[in-house]
Amino acid sequence: MTQAVLVLNVGSSSIKYQLLALDDAGEGERLATGLVERIGGQDPGKLSHRPAGAEALECTEVFASHAQALDAVLDAFRTAGPDLDEVKPTAVGHRVVHGGSRFTTATVLDDEVVSSLGELNPLAPLHNPPNLTGIEVARAAFPGVPQVAVFDTAFHQTLPPAAYTYAVPREWREEYSVRRYGFHGTSHAYVSRRAARFLARPVEEANVIVLHLGNGASVCAVERGRSVETSMGLTPLEGLVMGTRSGDLDPAVPAYLQRVAGLDADAVDRVLNRSSGLLGLAGSNDLRDVNRDAEAGDEDARLAHAVYCHRIRKYVGAYYAVLGRVDAVVFTAGVGENDARTRALSMQGLEGLGIEVDPVRNASAERGERSVSAPGTRVPVLVIPTDEEIEIARQTLGALGHAA
Ligand code: AMP
Image (cartoon, rainbow, N blue to C red; front, side, top):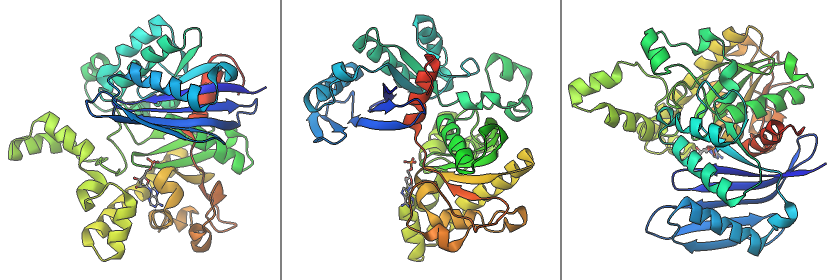
């Protein structure tokens, strides 16, 4: 049986959405995708609605609120299809960034859950409040349609205490919930499951290291289908070098900058999140620009890519030690799926661990799920395109007791 799910990813000034039809095996078909940008401003925003196999619709108008933007999305479905009254979505699935320690799995939204989600806002002040607005607006727009929250953190709730505990005083850990949570969980869950399938092994038997390298980037050690270590922490700042985020650095850096440069905690936080990473090192957060500049001989761009790949290599070695046995290293997201140079450079020198990228396979223009290691190497290196929306839809149906 096929069931439709409307997946909503609501940001502070945007709504991304997809209408998906899922069969019993969890395979999905996109019925429509869309995006509303610049919500809440005085300038006109833009809505792009793309129904599968039909003409796209674009409109420009002022979207004063998320509620008004969602109304415009419903209008777009009425005008350009597919007709939601005919498709009758089984549920609405919401991407929620932070689920704290309480939400270990996708959760059906009722008044009590919505109010406890509000309590998590301090943990993710940029992301959770707009997610919550999206939930409130969608509950009003789709009365009677079950709504489910799917958390970026939930997949990592299987981390053992030794991996999620920071070595800080009890008061910080207990009063202020300071611990590692991890993010990109829907992507790591989806990709690790597909990787096991690609290897023709049951998920419960496969150990994989997933490298989600997009604008945000994180690595996850997945042991027998469960996340046991991941590089993002209390917030999505820790770990790998990202488009605009620094990733790991000495925790003393903010206090040092306060002393020597007079920057307060908020200013340092902003710089580390918004103007560091590839942007801080090479002047662009897009690796395509960095690659182009590096090829043209720009030393900053070369260093940026070397730092980026060095950090990945270091984590793969560490997570190899965490897992003990690794059945595959898997690349995914914008950089991981598309940039052969990053795959090659970040895996360089890991031959001793049985990890070796094959230059010809790696450079091939092939798309989709594939191996880029030489046949017969001990640890296959795979590329598995991520699909967070399918995973959100799958988990949404799962939370409602429907198999998918
Ligand atoms: P994502 O967050 O998964 O959408 O990834 C976005 C990022 O992927 C962009 O900012 C680029 O840095 C990177 N990216 C996308 N396509 C390519 C490509 N063909 N080569 C290198 N990097 C790419």
